[in-house]
Length: 243
Image 1 (cartoon, rainbow, N blue to C red):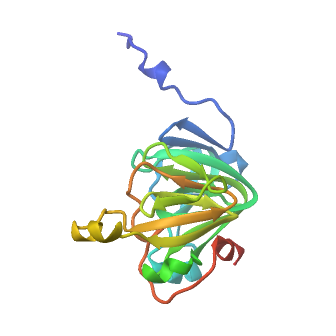
Image 2: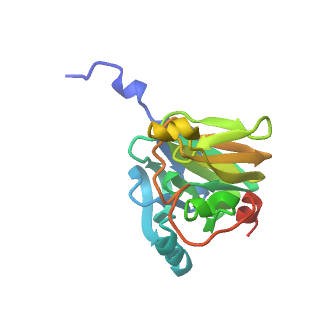
């Protein structure tokens, strides 16, 4: 007997032939004919054709040592071959962008996939207030190519040049080159301290030119925007993405 209903037509594969395209808000389709890609280890949910996977771990001994010290980074697998690869990360929403000789700073846990032409590294964020948190680390992605990141829910992209911009450190996913960041500790005043605080103690303050992406969930885990380390530093994001 035939199967009746719209299941197979409603959820038919997206016919787009772009290198990176969204199958839906929570699944990314990658055309492997454009060359190798780096994808988060374990993110493959399906593929058609001849696709091979090689576990790249932390990306070399240098990145491995940085990850061991900072807790930041992401295990990547190199994907090669021909066909179509589908990746996802626990049904998180996926955001796709194309960098053209540009750079972004991203929480490592939010990185899903990127073109092999993109360079990545773990960087200490040069923020004057970082010493108050024990150290802040992120992953910088730079170069030309596609990048896919994940968010919990639909994010908002805030133009930091339009007004003083502040965000909860556990909701910040990434920001663009040209953005400066500092750490602000807000106790909410004496009354707030007496009553047990506001729950908004650690805030990120942004300035400069560019965008910061904030998700509607305070679920960015330590090791991304916020991570214990040692020492202190000063400066802005220019130091992070310029090093």
